[in-house]
Amino acid sequence: MPTLTAAWASVDDRAAGDFWCTLEDRRPGLLPHRDALLFFTALGSLVVGGDAPANRAALLMVLARAYRRFDLLPHATTIGDALLATVARHAHALWTPQLTVVAKAAERRATHAVRRAASQAGDGRAWWHVQVIGHDRPSPDIAILTVRPWRRLPFQPGQAVPVCTPRLPGHWRWLSPANAPRADGTVELHVRAVPGGTVSHDLVHRVRPGELLWLGPPGDAGLRLDPARADDLLLVAGGTGLAPLRALVEQVAAAPDGRRVTLVVGARTFTDLYDAIALDKLQCAHDWLTIVPAFSDDPCAEPPEQGDALTIALRHYEPGQEIYLCGPPAMLAGARSRLLALGIPAARIHVAGSFAR
Image 1 (cartoon, rainbow, N blue to C red):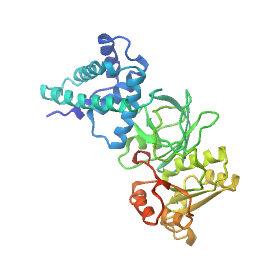
Image 2 (spheres, rainbow, N blue to C red; image 1 turned 90 degrees about the vertical axis):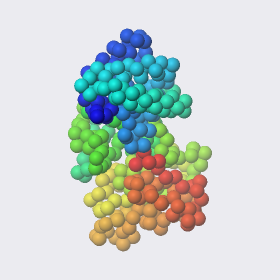
Image 3 (tube, rainbow, N blue to C red; image 1 turned 135 degrees about the vertical axis):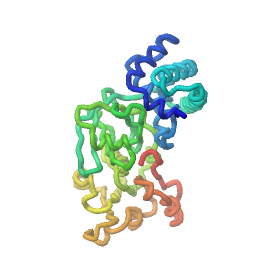
Image 4 (tube, rainbow, N blue to C red; image 1 turned 180 degrees about the vertical axis):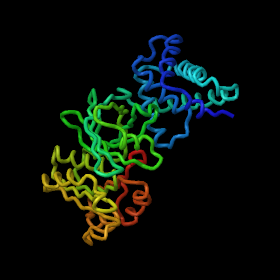
């Protein structure tokens, strides 16, 4: 029996224009033509489902803003019907009466999820067009992308943003900017190609300078600094979890307030320490910053640097510090309970949300 996933996979990019025409016939002026591809692919991906929770959250963030920005909520039923009618036309060989029933139920669930997300989303743009102006490969599976938005992205250090490549429209993934906001508006993104990660694989191995990407609205990853406090910081990073924590260091550097910062950077070996040059520049520029490498599998490392990032970080912990952690799931699993068991107050422990890893 044909599935909704198979039907959606058989639809090509021309369907987005067909969707816009169908919607324009039924309710003129709802959606700008230039945004048809982004909207159609995002909503279609949400209807099909099957994505990881973090990726679904990225889709919902983007769609919630789009529905609010274009005032689409009163017309959600019309939009859903236009989407299904378009897919049915373009996947006619697979479209059956049974699949119609399944698709309609999936569309209703997706629309309900968007309505709920839109009730909590802020106002503003749903997406930003950005141009890749730099693509460095410090290691075979990691890329550092520098992008320039056509309009300034209003993010804060420690946040995460949904990212989509036109090579895979409809697939949105979370990445955290590795910098504090810059005067020129550029944003630096650190990406590791993970097994089975189609978006991360494209961003690392295929995207080149001059290409366009889309960024969605910034979201809270649990790592923002409290503007009302100036406590010393202990930042614990693993892999590309370094990105949002480096952004916090840059935030402190932009407005020094007397706090001291210790940044522990975890990697398997010295050669896996992919951002070493930028870290060295930060270390040399600021006497309030101490950067400590942590190597989990490097017999050549100095004894104080051998071990996992959290274990080494705890050797540098001082009462009163705020602790921020970001890294792969294996690093973060149990980290909070371990810190609580040591008597560190829960309010001083900040662990990255799963979508920011």
